[in-house]
Length: 476
Image 1: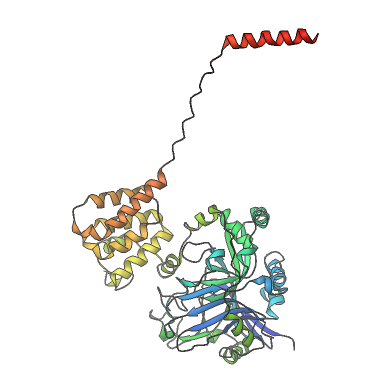
Image 2 (image 1 turned 90 degrees about the horizontal axis):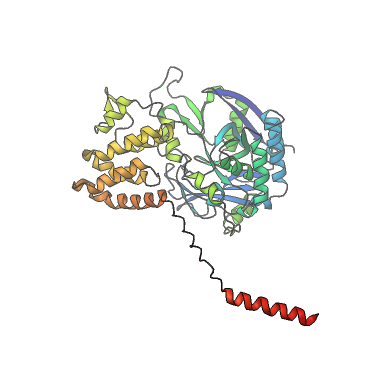
């Protein structure tokens, strides 16, 4: 039976979203529950056919705000012609200007039954913590920003997924392919691709891994078409913010990372698809995916990426910056000054949060993303204020990776201070100063050895010349 697909578009907060209902599909790719020990963890696996590609593990069973462990266990090369299908869809959408359903048809025919929202989003080629995305997922570890719901701004703010998880193994990386991608991206405004939402702020990149790498090297944007499963339904009462005139009491929403879609705006057939499929995990490939998800990764590679690629990632925003920027529209000088005085409220309203420590962490992340010069000024002012000692350790730690003369001067000043308040951060200050010194020092050029004049022995030269003449005359 041919896969049945229904679609409709909605404009929410000036952004277009296409909702797709997929039914009667063979369910050859998507994400499914592969949990074995249900009392200890929840494991979901992104799969294509029988191949389990990426595991997402939630260690805290009842805490949807806790970060998750993400690990790549297999790669797209083992998935038949799926790479070709995704490449075709990518070309049809970004180059041939086909609509979303028509462009994605080659892969939608195999997408697991369910309700999905599809939209464009700018992506960042890191793991949300400054490490380049391609080799970051070969080891199991917890990624910031990977929780089901944002651990910083909870349910009230929409935080679009922004970070990439590879589906190709690092073994496929090659300098020749990268150079080809660089030439291609040079002629375009940006790199493009298609990705599938996994959890929180993370998506599996299904195509164009080398183009994403090229975009990073050329300082260009990466724009992806995101396919996100819709799996949650929430009430307006679940959100802490005050209801607007457009929101009725107890309104129900289809909840995604990128948008809250009122049920009243979604057609009845699509809602039926959502309620029928959202709890159903059984499928043609489920048993083999569960089995394969338990295997250890076989994509290990000794390949290393050029240093200029990994160095660029330090300058890209991390998950805390993006989450903080999602919940703060603007932070005024008056609000910043109030925070510097140790206040959490201004004009009877919370500036950010009733908890001062939380307010400072969010304010710093927001300013670092939006206004770097103000971020530096704010961080320095906090550390200079002895009354704000409760947040000194956090601020000093936050400044460690940033090489800046102003920060170095500040840490020198704090080391010379006799105030006991700065005792706990003096070790951090010493480490920073040592790193900064190495950062700015230019190795002196080795002096060239002086030329040693050659002493000529004229007597030997004359004797040799006479001997040569004698030899020549004897031959004649």
